[in-house]
Length: 233
Image 1 (cartoon, one colour):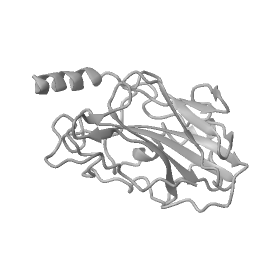
Image 2: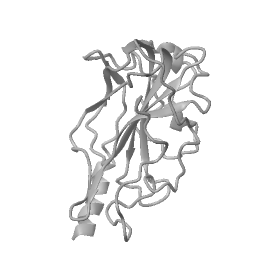
Image 3: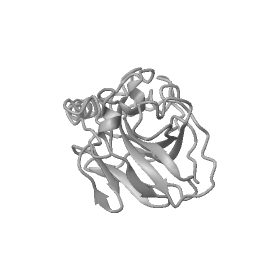
Image 4: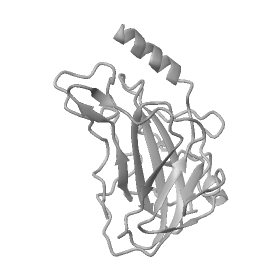
């Protein structure tokens, strides 16, 4: 019965796709795509599934996406976030990355190198008695803090959820992505790192990406997040 219920749950959740079009800054939810680069899935809401694809970076619609979005001013140490276009019903792992943006956050060359560092993550919890536990299935937004020692300047801010309801087979994990363009002020003299590139940060066989959440492997001891460690700043 448990296997049947799990299969039904996975099937029902397939339809619950979403985008992250609204950036939350200074306590305000901004307009759709005002500061977030419009993504290729802005109509379909479908995910990225190939970690080697260039879409894994920011999933831009095309070369005009960067120039069409504005640049939001964000104070280091403040709370920011993203609002989804739909209830985020998929169980999964959330994270946020930043990349220095050269020559500017609204340029197509920003974020192309090994420049991304992780600033936040929200992992499923695990106990031997309860198994894996995920964030509530009815959330519509998530927030986090820009590290207070982030150096001033322009950045791309990449939000991601890795949905794991179909991740039991390679290529089954679903990546929901949005990149906001920001200018950090009031920052510090930190040295963000370690840095990674997109694509490049993930492998399709990483244990946090290739994982059957309905039949955990023998000896399982907790979720292993893909990518680098979080820079606390």
